Image 1: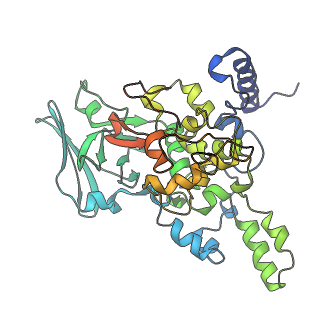
Image 2: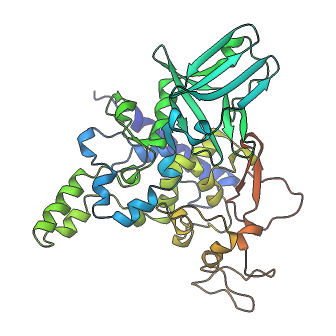
Image 3: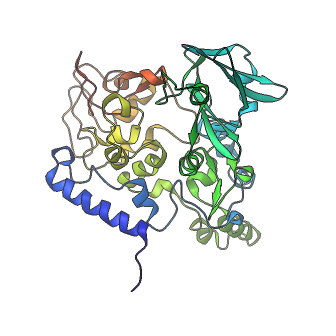
Amino acid sequence: MKRKDPLQTRSSMRKACLLVSLFLSPAASLPLRAQLSTDDHLAEPGWWPRRVPTSREEFVGMATCAKCHAKIAATQATTPMANTLIRAEAADDLQSRSDLTFRNKNYGYKIKVNGGKAELTVTDGKRTFTDALTWAFGTGKVGQSYLFLRDGNYFESRVTFFSTLNNLHFTPTRALLDPHDLEEARSRPVGIAEVERCFSCHSVGSRIAEDFDTSKLAKGVTCEGCHGPGQKHAAAMEASALQQGVGEEEGKQLIFDPGKLSPNDAVDFCGACHGTWWDIKLTNVKGIANVRAQPYRLMSSKCWGNGDARLRCAVCHDPHQNLSEDDASYDEKCLACHVAIGEKPSKDHPGRACPAGSKNCAGCHMPKVEVPEMHHTFADHRIRIVKPGEPIPD
């Protein structure tokens, strides 16, 4: 008897649970709101973020992509996505500061660059441990967390840099107020499965088939993180250029274009790293704790309905450009669905007019919510009419 692939079995079980939830759960009353988890998408054929390639030769690197897409490549390289993983010693926030400290009762923490190395020092006043940090996750605009290797195993620093504090504090969700000893206060051991997941969203090519090797990865989310390995596409397009355009259309089919996904799949695509509806439901993270899971929050909005191409993540946030923090810059996106005051909703513009106005829509309907463990505010993508004093909805 042929043995079933465990991943396919798990995917089938989740889909069965999903069907049951659609019929029985009031929270999933909209037919297409709960779609697939990221694991389910990865069980499907074709490219998807966090997919493990079979060969490193499939990748060509950003420089090759830039030969034909110079403008997009140049702007994308400046985005937080492109710089979400760097070597710790190269982190600007560490290089420019020598006074990053934190104290938890008897335990003192300090991070500084010393002799070209980013060092984490933890002491209880009697003993002191110093570790050379290896990787910095995040640009530091909001926060930046750190991993290091010890005896071949990965550990996470108990402290993170936060821009609003201009200093260190507990790494999000890792607060340990009463460590048993200095060893526990020093860091948290991180298993290889968790490490691989971190690198799969913060880099490209960290794992190829069964080989996990951070020495050969592309730091940050580069072109091939979203469009998939580009070797076949690049070769076909170079051949087409030599043949004066012959084979160009065929070459375009050899690279993945997320822009052609359905609205539902497009939001799940970004959700592979930012949190799909089903991923968050599986983890049972509720309220303010899931505000940072923008795809989940968006798909929980009344605006979402069954999915609309005008509400895809990339409509408001071009992944090749830096994020706009001006609420007014998103007004035209809202008015692509909502009518102006005095007009009646139509098939193309089903959204009613807002009686309060048609400017700075996001400021009212996507309020900034402070996530305590992040020491920062985030725009809540659960679009709604916000009532003063109401709790953050799940």
